[in-house]
Length: 304
Image 1: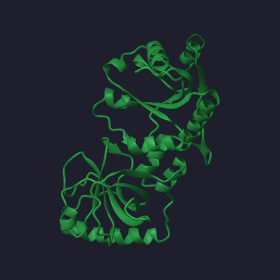
Image 2 (image 1 turned 120 degrees about the vertical axis):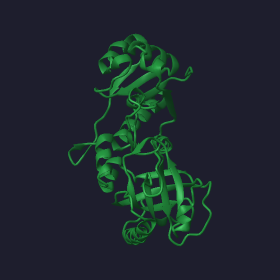
Image 3 (image 1 turned 90 degrees about the horizontal axis):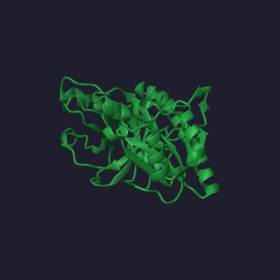
Image 4 (image 1 turned 90 degrees about the vertical axis):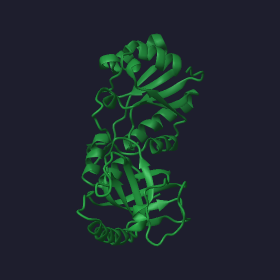
């Protein structure tokens, strides 16, 4: 791939696209507009940690689709996904700058953090980029730091909050509602037999930062968001798999959602995912969870 039009770019995972990422993207877009460049985000797939350690499970905040949408909403016009494979992992940092950033992406403005590392053995850093920039015709910029309540906003902090079920803290750092979107797929239809017909969204990745039972709003099926209860996780009571699903039950709704694209907006975490001794015990708890979720949503309006 060769990028003919010059770019202003930043490189990273950008999971969740939080308030700090949004501030960075605004700087990239502003510079690109002033200089006639294409505002670009460069990211890697899979995550380097997952490539080097097949047992590593990155707890993702949002899906890749939702990350790209959030980037585009910030004004980013181009998202480049670099395959992280053996060749990329062994690429010397100078070659990465010359062949990827300059030749392929025609970078003129680059934003990275002081702790950014790249190239074989993570030998490349901000200072190397700075030293190479005059000869290769690009400028290197520092990433801005964003704080909320005197705390640096970071994906790690958001994951920690979501691990605890603290959706409100996570959303404050994200700067937007926590959402999962995608097309509804067919499931095993067990919920229908139990009196809780659910819509299923497959969540990509090996692990999710948030899991458990959630009070949610469903967008895309009606003119107004629909109050619902959802389960995000591995369904330990009824299945033994590593597939993460978001199953959503909308009380009183009888439409056909298969194949439709919906957005599930998380309002509150109710409880962790549990493994029940019987289906009857699970159904009894589902009735309780549904009532709790609907009661919460009476005073927790949608923010989309």
